[in-house]
Length: 67
Image 1: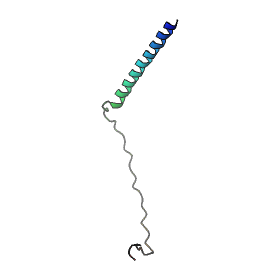
Image 2: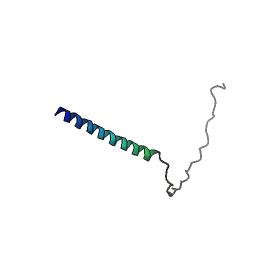
Image 3: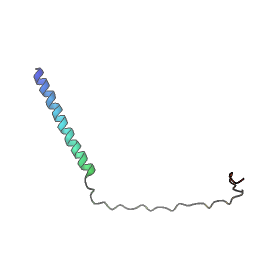
Image 4: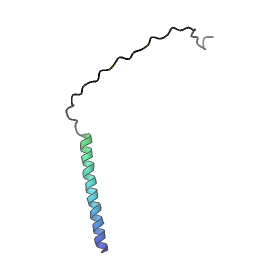
């Protein structure tokens, strides 16, 4: 009976290992294969950013180093 359990567990672990290996190979194949021809995507037009003109300075800019 113990021998049957041992063989059952051994075979189950072996099958799980084989499945994990197949899944890993499929993952690597799908991640690192050459990309197919790119599908033509419609480009979204970029709106120009509206920038407000800067206000005139009402103060003197003085450097602390030039005293």
